[in-house]
Length: 522
Image (cartoon, rainbow, N blue to C red):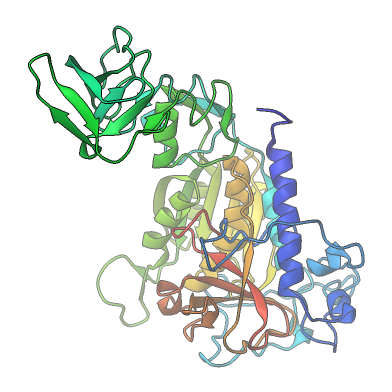
């Protein structure tokens, strides 16, 4: 293979370049004033802020990832990404941000299915990062975990730590692609009595004017020039031996032969570092001669579900609600590349939470609920007592703004998710997915955009994530059930549309995030 092998930095640069093009497409038709200020000229741009739409690698056919050149010089990439330091997000210095109260990490007042959140811009928490900034911070928070060697069966779901290079030519010998006869020279051909099967040595050379029965996958004998398929040949019995006739014309040289190195040459790079090991990758690696693979360690993740009002079985009743996050988070995290070591319930007591956080050995600890300022919201004070460093403390996104990301004294990280189910999903997409991608050595997926079938109201200052489904024209239809406590819309969604502050009009292109179980997603 000629040229320089692309590494993680190249992949990151390519992904960010693709994001730039997707952002330009998503914001097409807006004025420069809207790009830089989100002012009266229109709603602010769809911001992916270098963290990527993380929307998968683009589905086949109707939805296309938009790889392409860097952002055009006439547009400020920081402004396009929502990172303009002169924007309204940089609020008054010295003002102490007021946390919102409410039981599970600020269970936000739910808008009606048809309406937008009605919090006025003046109430924006000035400590909140923008949604793109938060995703960038999460991606930059960790470092790639060490590489390990795994047998093929144990490498599934890991990311490759090194290029997958062909150990030999594939195929490593000329092979019959069909059941039939190997022939040498022009016909008709004198049939030999022996036959060649897969796994046998080809033996002596085939003489000109001779043919030999051969099975699919068998090695061609020296001297063979083509294969005649069984359905394209006719044999004739004679006293001096059998004779083979071609019934569909004389075969061309190399017909129905898989020549040596048809797929690759020994030493050729087959897959780049960062590619996730799928069943197909395992098959390719085995075909290429590998017994084990060098992969990145999967991040160990533990989930702490907080809330004395949560039930793990039965019907919700009298102030008690079912725990939706416990069953949902573990498989979602595994789809994002994590190894979930456990999901535990923790009572609403400071000492219990302190103990649970202090004793974890996970690379990433996830808590659900308790990140606001209610009477039993203990996550902030516990982190302060433990000496954790807050990297993200609130994000300008709806639902889910009271999320947080902290670096623990022992070196691991903690993501505090809101307790409302859809708000927690927003936290997974905003903070957990980018951080896990860094830890697991996975590349940033290329984003894609789609056209909205109807207008979506926006928050005055915050990004909104709205469940959508694709219609027959590959446009996205916003779903009604998008309140922070609702999962009905998400359960039927194809993805989440990124709605910029101020909202989006019908027909407008907007970034779409795939869900983790649909692709490499979010």
